[in-house]
Image (cartoon, rainbow, N blue to C red; front, side, top):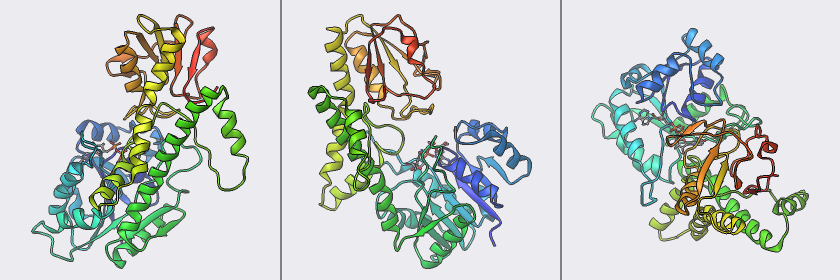
Amino acid sequence: MINKVIVIGLGYVGLPLALAAAKSGYTVVGIDLSAEKVSNINNGNSSVEDVDPTDLQELLLNKKFRASTEYNEIRDANIVLICVPTPLLKNQLPDLSILEIAARSLSPHLAKSSLVILESTVAPGTTRDFLAPLIRSHKQIDKDGFELAFSPERIDPSNKNWNLKNTPKIVAGLTENSKKKAVEFYSKFVDQVIECDSLEIAETSKLLENSFRLINISFINELSKLCYKLGIDVSHVIKAAATKPYGFMPFYPSIGVGGHCIPVDPLYLSSKAKDLGEPMQLIDLASQINFTMHQYFVNRAEEKLQGLKDKKILVVGVSYKPNLADTRETPVEVLIASLKQKSAKVFWHDDLVKEWNGEMSVALGCDFDLAILATPHDYLDLTKLGNVPIIDTRGSI
Ligand SMILES: NC(=O)c1ccc[n+]([C@@H]2O[C@H](COP(=O)([O-])OP(=O)(O)OC[C@H]3O[C@@H](n4cnc5c(N)ncnc54)[C@H](O)[C@@H]3O)[C@@H](O)[C@H]2O)c1
């Protein structure tokens, strides 16, 4: 019988998960190192767009959910979910230091027979060979004193059709019992739980999903450059190809990839592949192609205006994807830096982001030499740009 669930890391993954579990009847405590975040959440405010503040407030009121900075909340919990960031180091290799801190912090408090579930994205073998020994090494935990499972989060922030409930959830366990307990837990609030035969299959499947996106996005970006040279509209090409009812899935051009997942996760797979002497060259090439897209659009701007010095350029949309205020790893950052390097006067507009890197969003208007549409939010009214020429990086207009 599960009485108390802990979710470590109350970000884009952890907070919606904690609330979904609380709504289904579990009593949930979310742990985060950020005292400010914990206080905001306990006051009913969330910075995660997909979280409905009324849902949060109701769960707080009914005492089904609260946030805390204290790891000792774990002592009487049956299930502990880890949702902390797994970023890259400067040299693009996996950085597991945050996961390690979370594991070392939780293990002294872990109750016997409780189940730990890792949701953070990791390379194959990490749950078994990195996380399990870290938890086991703590003196208060005897060898078989806990269960361990891996269930990768598939959340797509701002997606109106697919959410935690209706997106099938992959689950694998260190033991059959771990898997059984994890399946039982998720089945309360997820429509379909898919069991994998091993932790490594589940870990690799998450990296396959995100590498598939990275590679296809880079491919369509290359195609969009070719279409420009051919004088044809890449969006019409994609639309025509997408009429094929099987074997094709549309991807759309951009100035590169952003967020916590697509630019990062495939490099976890590529790093593991190199370790095993079986390099995945396509992933590395795709990363490189995407990373040069901003330069391509700077060149296009330069060509259009015959030089960028002192030209007033408005970059429209700075978050990493449409209809979201999230600027993590946004490729727009390097686009703006490169334009500034060419001595252009760069402004940006994004009413969702509002303030970013110490600068404020400016209004859409006619007083620019060029606009670069980087992230096409639905709310944008581009007619406000009047006759300002637009470079459309997404093929969306
Ligand atoms: N954001 C997405 O769309 C998405 C989708 C699928 C998977 N993921 C994966 O999920 C994981 C979490 O991503 P996220 O986007 O939720 O990150 P996030 O940055 O939004 O949130 C992480 C939270 O963890 C907290 N934290 C950091 N160290 C901690 C610690 N030691 N103890 C307690 N709290 C700690 C941070 O303060 C932060 O609030 C990553 O591995 C990511 O790759 C993210």
